[in-house]
Image 1 (tube, rainbow, N blue to C red):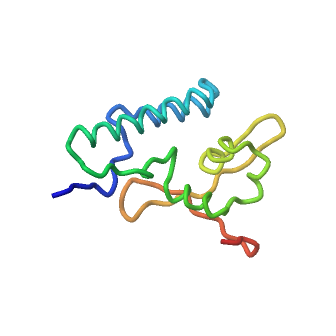
Image 2 (cartoon, rainbow, N blue to C red; image 1 turned 135 degrees about the vertical axis):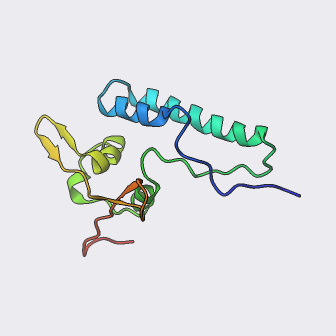
Length: 131
């Protein structure tokens, strides 16, 4: 019999990704540093599944912030106020807002996932949104 898991928990044992993204947003680490941490965490996840004898390793279950928001970005649902930011700045600005020099962009609304303490970003769809 072959084994598979449909996904893997996103929160690491020591919350490494959360700490790394917070450091990135404070400009304490570079985009390259954040990318290296991301690669290491994905590799660890895959290795853990392999070590446990899982035949088909789950993929595409990693997100820097929010998988609902990742899908919105994939579909191009990016509000105009974020369009002038670099890709990674844009990604986090939508969740946290962004202030720098003359730029002051407010974050998008968040709401609870059912009755859990998990919050996700609420997509902003307007008439000109094309999916």
